[in-house]
Length: 69
Image (cartoon, rainbow, N blue to C red; front, side):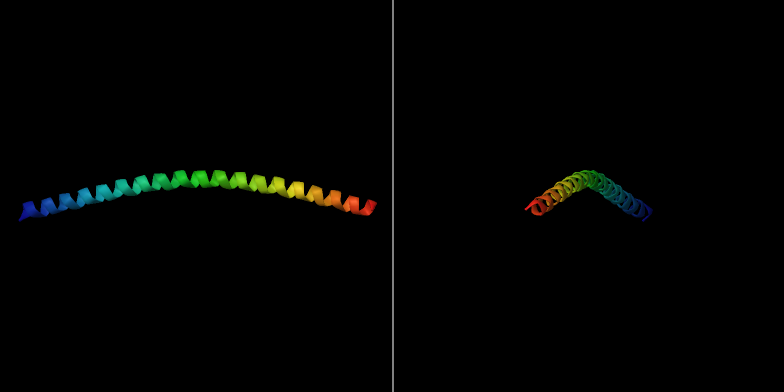
């Protein structure tokens, strides 16, 4: 009877180890994806700021042209 309990415990430990490894691998993947998303977000924010600046400059030029006419 004790041998069966030990075997059952060994199986449970093996399952926990497997689950732990799977979760660790998934966590590493998610962290990697998060890093990539943050980098992409930073690029998009920079592009948005550049576009906003250019559009504001164009609007100002159009206002000046409108005043001249």
